[in-house]
Amino acid sequence: MSDTRKEMAVDTSELTRQLEYMHHIRQLNDEYTMKTGNKKKYYSLAMGCQMNAHDSEKLEGMLDEMGYVKTDVETEADFVIYNTCCVRENAEQKVYGKLGWLKHYKKDKPDTVIALCGCMMQQDTVLKTLREKYRHVDIVFGTFNLYKLPELMKTRMESGETVYDIWQEHEEIVEDLPSIRHFPYKASVNIMFGCNNFCSYCIVPYVRGRERSRTPEDILAEVKKLAADGVKEIMLLGQNVNSYGKSLDEPVSFAKLLRLLNEIEGIERIRFMTSHPKDLSDELIEAMKDCHKICKHLHLPVQAGSSEILRRMNRHYTKESYLETVEKVKEAMPEITLSTDIIVGFPGETEEDFQETLDVIRKVGYSTAYTFIYSKRTGTPAATMENQVSEDVIKDRFDRLLNVLNPIIHELNEKMVGKVVMVLAEETSKNNEAVLTGRADNNALVHFEGNKDLIGQLVPVRIIENKTFYLIAERV
Ligand code: 5AD
Ligand code: SF4
Image (tube, rainbow, N blue to C red):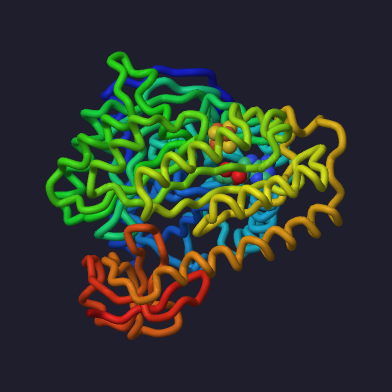
């Protein structure tokens, strides 16, 4: 078995090396197809955040290059890959559940190769559990060496043993990996990796390492290529986009990057996430206001309303300073919508603290909120804090939170009824082929009747009905 490794420098020839492995595996797969008439199939599952979804596009791009075809039916797969998440405990339980199922699957189909990667794999306790209880897993790697998939597959084929390859940290960024985009008209673009913030409840800095920004040149080149490919909307991804560029040899601000991207012909919409409230600059607000392609929607996770809880969360802002930032943003762009993340039941959260969270929700008026029950993550400072809140109390607060939140969302959406907005038509509705779904500039989810040919286009529609979590519209 190969073992856990420390930092390693990767030069530009790394991509060439991996392309050679891909080519080698492709030849083997072509031979298999000639012999059997079948193509090998892969099943790929991305759990958790958009960062993982985007990483999986790269994994799928490499598998495609190696001659595998994608299947959405797991029981057809010759190669199974889970890109895991560990932000909350239930995401980890899901992986173990699926691995239990795969053990039986592999009894019937022993040639199936099972690969695990992503955040969960960066934890020693997880590796120990896999080594002890889930020995049917074939390839295990982490968040820093995703691009090594072809090499690890080859090692597995040759050794016949489980391959573990987990790095602790990584400075370099490997550019230009093959990638399969899930949508032709919109794409995610990483602008930075990792996080330096160490919010006391969060495992991300431990599993994704320190902040590293891509250069503006690399980002611009990628976005220009996407535009040439027909992409209209880009989503810039980073754990804390507001601190983009600070660590570059020639520092560049996120606002400056946005202004450069706004100039790219063919790109019509720019979105980004996530913004940390402590780093939201006036310069960014100005850039958002000035650049017409930047969508007027801001995801600004508050996490909690009580300044004391925020202090213990290590968030570096108070309730008051957060609300001031929101006011500034709204003043500059009255049409903007805001969304947020909220954690209920952080250790020591009292009823008064919880009321502060409700107060922020009422004052800001979020159009969407991702609400989470606090999940204890071993290794984070919050895991050993006193006064962990009981399950019953958390459940009750969570329900009350939604009771406050949902009418506010409804009320905000009501203001959109009667308005004409541009919607990027994304796909047909799951329940009705004649209905298209898409997002307005302000991120509102809109359903309207229309032909499939409109998918990928910006379509003007009038909002006619408010369904709280989505809007119904008609074409104009
Ligand atoms: N428990 C619950 N929610 C968490 N998040 C991060 N860590 C935890 C945790 N331990 C939430 C935060 C973050 C979002 C991506 O996940 O709200 O913004
Ligand atoms: Fe986690 Fe905080 Fe970093 Fe977000 S900013 S990834 S919540 S540590």
